[in-house]
Amino acid sequence: MSEDQTPIQNTENDDNQIVAERRAKLAELRQNGIAFPNDFERRDYAGDLAARHASDDAETLKAQPVRVQLAGRMMLKRVMGKASFATVQDMSGRIQLYIARDLIGESLYDAFKHWDLGDIIGVEGVLMRTKTGELSIQASTLRLLTKALRPLPEKFHGLADQEQKYRQRYLDLITNEATRETFIRRSKTIQAIREHMSGHGFLEVETPMMHPIPGGAAAKPFVTHHNALDMQMYLRIAPELYLKRLVVGGLEKIFEINRNFRNEGLSTRHNPEFTMMEFYEAYRDYRYLMGFVEDLLHAVAIRVTGHAVVPYQGHHIDLAHPFARLTPVEATRLYNPDLKDAPLDDIAFVLAELQRRKIAYRKTDALGGLQLTLFEETTEHLLIQPTYIVEHPVECSPLARANDSRPEVTERFELYIAGREVANGFSELNDAEDQAARLQAQAAAFDAGDEEAMFYDADFVRALEHGLPPTAGCGIGIDRFVMMLTDAASIRDVIFFPQMRSAG
Image (cartoon, rainbow, N blue to C red; front, side, top):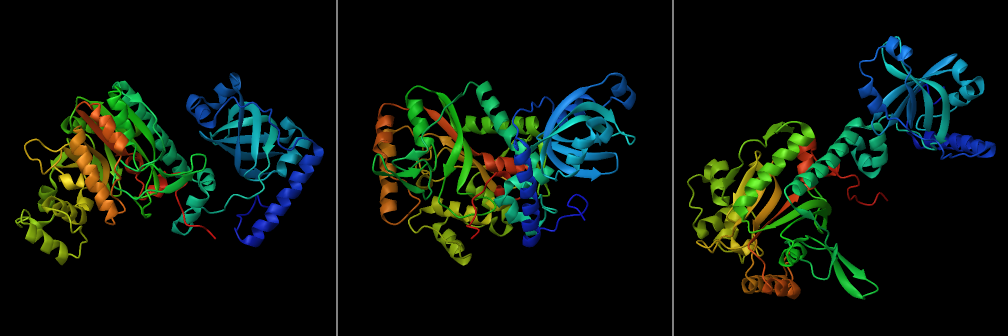
């Protein structure tokens, strides 16, 4: 039985035999001329043809011929006597080819019969409808553009193949329409965010990916070495300190969409490199930012999905309704009935509760930090609908402005959706002396063994001494937002090439 007629079982021996047969076909192509031609001009796409001619019946297409020139990967093939069918896939979708020996010639028809699934071909012809009404291309000529040496997998879905999907994303994209749709939606999401920001007067900027001093977030950095400068450098954990330098320089509404790198574990919510947008606007505060982020996420969801309520893992996330705003203590009480009336303002009780639940905490934290730890371990995973958590303690927010009337808390929010943090924003600390003191405290914590504490950045403090206007800034996790808009259970499902352990 031929490869075209029976499903391929992807055993190693089968693959070796098939690859050898295909290499022999390629060798014959090389002998007969140019094996990989590059002069075929594609003019049409399968999806566009289907959309434009959806209402054209067979008589219309026959009376008013539509000539097309299309290329793509051959996914299906049904060889008969004097006529055959094939299905070609390009980036926009699939379309069927009707290939008749009398129309393309006996020599080309015979060659086509020896082409394989996965080969990339070009076709010229006219549109037609088959007896079953399927829009097809009646081929007048065919070209073999790329010989595929390896077969397409017969099956490429299910939990057993999940790791292979991540490692060989190209095969996943070829064979899985849902995967292609996920990444098309990701691209549209980022485009919609850019357009929304630009439409609101923000300037897109780029800042360094390698930093002499890690900063902008509490995380363990990746370390590298710059040979020409002979100095240790760090892949950035956040662009924040450079973006605020630009605000000092007078760029008062800016945003950046780019990669961050954090040397942390892998999970369904974490990848060591991930995409974020950070944006800053002068003469605004964190309250304004919360409204702006609500509008942004709502507008992007409408643009990308057509709906303000999106299904996600059995829930319906409502991005149209105003987002809830709770303190860590309020959220802990609301979502944990056993703590509803507990004395969460009593540090002794909170300590005892953390110990009873076997929750790790930093021994140096004051009451606010302990309350935040209790919230993170008991409550954040329960915040399904969009919820802002506000009033973070100063000791946990070294870059945020303290509240004027309650100096123990900052003007900061974290946005949780579907049980995970999606955004983090605050009124920026623009008091250079206060910032210097907080960074010194962070440096002391690092020296004491906290690998996620920040370094002291003297140049950043110097920039603040030139004067940072009152400013609000926010970071939004693009990958996690895309997960929500695509109903993806894992962050790996929305990153083309997620980090994996060595296959060896």
